[in-house]
Structure formats: C-alpha cells, structure tokens
Image (tube, rainbow, N blue to C red; front, side, top):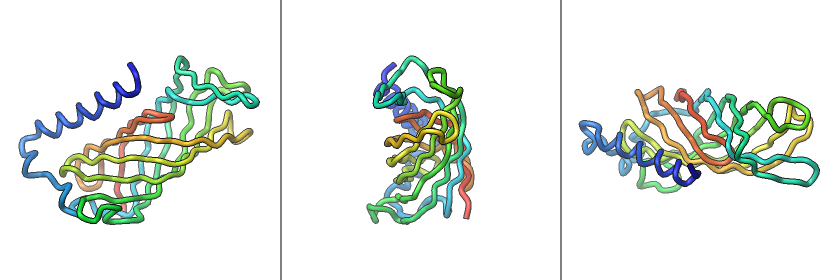
Length: 187
C-alpha cells in the first residue's frame, strides 16, 4: 500500500467516525476560536513504525522501504500561538520536539536508530472529539547514540480522538514514521 493510499484511508476513516457520531453537527467547533482544550503543553508517549528512512554510508543516501523499523518515543509540543495563523478558526501553533528509538536491521554498527525531531505543529480543532494537525521540521538521526549525526527533514499529518479535555488518542503518518500514542494536555 502506498503512502498516499494509507494517508487517504486514515483521513477517510477519521472523517467517517466523526460523521457517524450522534451529535456531529452540533459539535462542530472549527469556526469557534478557543473552543478546544485549554493547555500549555501536550505530552505524548507513542509507538513508532518507521517505513521511510534514509541510510547513510559515506555520501550515499538511500530510502529503503523493505526494512521497517519498530520502536517507541516521546513527543512534547508547547503551544506558542492561540489562536494560530488564522484567527477566525479554531487553531493553535506549537513547537514540537522529542525522541524516538527504533530497531535497525540495516544499520552498520548498532542495532538501533536514534531520532530527535524539532519542528512546528499546526493544530485544527474540527469537532469537539477530533482535531487534526501537521508537523514540519528538522530531525537528527543516528545509528546508535549520537555517534554519527545526520540532519534531515520530517513532515507528518495526524489526528487526535479526544476522550476528554485532558487525554486523546493520537496518530501521525509521514516521513519518517507512523506513530500511535496517547496525548496528555497539561497546563
């Protein structure tokens, strides 16, 4: 299954779940700025499934798809704009950063890869139970623990199913990961 197909399927499934909710029409909050959880930071432990990654050996850059990486990580996002770039919509902007550790079958020296992303997250609160976001930034990757560091970029789309004001199920897909975790809104 291609990345575009997986992304389209994930977004379509989320839209169907929202549409089938009993009071979906009454819960739309996208045009109500600040009708979202009141938080300063989002803390998210997650599992990571790496499909799209680069292999660095000298100056050689490859994107192998046949050797998936499995692992976990933690992401924190600190809200910096509320409302975000579009003041008439229910959106926020935050600085996101974290760490991921995954297995690595094709690594040269170690059996694991270490990733450190830092970027910008733009959130849209669509209905009371669902929000969507985009992450864009830079990531440092290394085989092992910072022995040789390689800068790269990351780009991800994701969504959250909000159980309540403080906890949500969070998924994201993009380069280099698919992650699934639980977000805690604090502050």
